[in-house]
Amino acid sequence: MNRRQMKAAARLYAVQALFQMEVSGQTVEAVRAEFEDHRFGAVYEEGEMAEGDVELFRAVLDRAVNHQGRIDQMTDRALVAKWPIARIDPTLRAVFRAAGAELVEGGTPPKVVISEYVELAKAFFPEGREAKFVNAVLDHMAREAKPEAF
Image 1 (cartoon, rainbow, N blue to C red):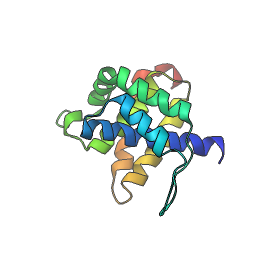
Image 2 (image 1 turned 90 degrees about the vertical axis):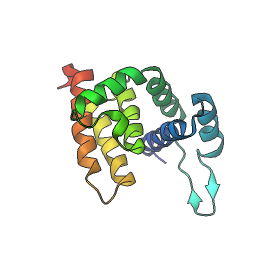
Image 3 (image 1 turned 30 degrees about the horizontal axis):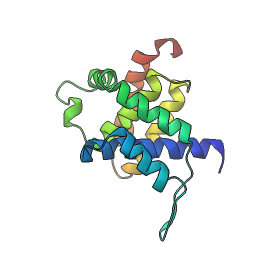
């Protein structure tokens, strides 16, 4: 598995972990341990789970938790007024928090972050318009977080 695939797997796991934390109320430490011990590279009857970039996974989780207030405020400003972050789908909220973590603090260029998380949105919502929605919201968030990159 190449480096890019490992980063993509780490981002997927980070979104899943953030979603799991929100719906289950588990701590970041508990969810991180579960993913690292049981998901990364695990083999199931349905197939093998991808080996992810553990450092990126940890960084995205930690930043998403440590900067959640700031990320959620950026997301709220990018959303239309009648759709505050609390009203959107929890999977999308996890996507915005993971992407926001990389936009707020991280060395990946904003356009790459946006592209990667739009691809994840397509995987989670293959039938819908969510990918376009994610693209628009993340573009707004990126311009706020890193205006010098545009």
